[in-house]
Length: 286
Image 1 (cartoon, rainbow, N blue to C red):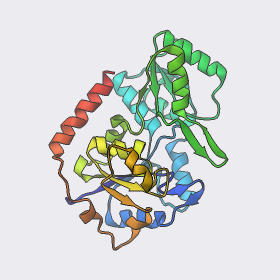
Image 2 (tube, rainbow, N blue to C red):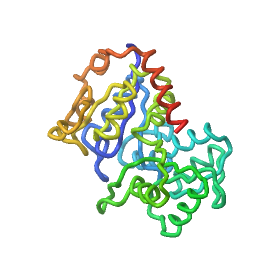
Image 3 (cartoon, helix red, strand yellow):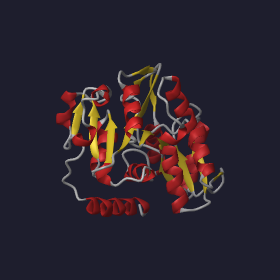
């Protein structure tokens, strides 16, 4: 293997709240110095990629918006392939609206092709009522992610998954989710870095989003114990990450041989590629 690329979760890996995790800046500088491509993956559809990059910059991580890949982007690109120049009613905020517009979608509240749900603080009972009526009228229900809640500086608030559950219960329709751990987003991010499965490393702090997403795609997976999943939690899961680290500082250490760490593969690239395409086709036809 002569190339690696990294798909990196942020909250719990790079920072916690507004506090940078030790070693995060050094790790990104190490990737830059070695020429390893990387993307920060987020299931937050509320912010634009520029907003996310600005937050990281202010915390001392030198990145541009080209290093950000959001579930809003993945959702908008997926829908533009399914139905080019389609229409959507959106329960969400600026990041999702911008992504849809950039991919040729119009935002409407009458006979949309899709009802697309993100997270945010501007949701109202009226918007949920409208979304319910539109889904029952024939619009397809799309979730940018199924995270049940979102961490904030003041505590936990309901996430996209909670809003989607409300609409599923109200309509009897099942939403298609595009964000992590969906193969749609995980594969799209890998392809943006021009990588094959054996070259792709996923670093995350939660087993049921980043790690399961990477496992399903045949990527290298690294669980950082600095966030949502602790070592004692691992026995609850039927799958395991390839590597467990205390924090991103372990990978920032120059003594850590990144190429050596991720060179041992038992999965054939062509098989993984075919499996990727099959999974994406299943989701597309759902």
